[in-house]
Image (tube, rainbow, N blue to C red; front, top):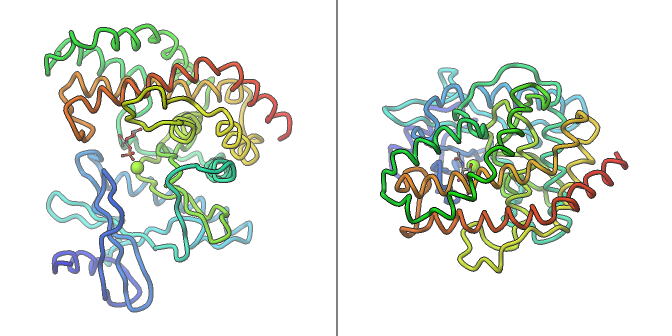
Length: 361
Ligand code: GN1
Ligand code: MG
């Protein structure tokens, strides 16, 4: 690894001199390294400044949320250094190190932790639900304001503003070729805005949301128990229903997010049940009546939003998501639309499962 990376690592308050730096994973957004000192291991990340315009505000969100979580874990007799992400400050006491256009941040590596990419077993779906449910339950009494690190992230009113603009500008000249897909969005506009209006009117409360609840963002220990939730970059205030919805979108899909064979794509209702069961066991007790009522719908809402975002990026000429081939965003939009249809077909069953499981909490 090059000297520059060692210089950067040396800006942080690690416990001993750095002896090794290696690349970790292949995230689409940040560059991640594992730093070894003579005593411990750490995670070092170059945060993507294009996606996160204010990295300092993002790190401040993370610091405040993890401080709250650590107090909870300590009170329960747990180990806050294993059950919560620990931000390592720089030697000058900052939460990130800024060098030119780059922002770097570090955290403690949790030894012995395991991650999973797909919810292949009922147990993994259940434990994933527990992980996010517990994260949210511990933050149910967190009332400090958090910075909006990505504007209007799950705000469909804002997404429709961007959408209307994209259609007006038709920057890549692709609009005429996707008339059918545009109709998928327009036909659900009122329904989706009505959900968001409940957030705007306070019927659905604002809470701390993680905003990237895929299974691989949960660390497990060697007994397959949840250790902690990682990747807190998108922690913000919104309706926590969307963390549930986005997990359902990613866990239950029987196909790939960008599947070209739509016959493979559907929502697996058993996976839905297992995730929901784990989630409600931890979080059911702290949910309001309206949150309970709209929980299942959040899966449709987030999947719809994803159809809109992929299609909009296709119409815009692929400026947000990385694409592997020219129609990639269109393929993603079609596959997510197929998943949305499958959820719509099974919506009554989803609601019945939520009601049944809520009776047990
Ligand atoms: C992006 O790169 P990843 O998977 O962490 C996106 C999510 C989308 C997802 C779709 C900051 O997340 O909102 O749901 O792609 N994250 C951001 O695969 O835009
Ligand atoms: Mg992420």
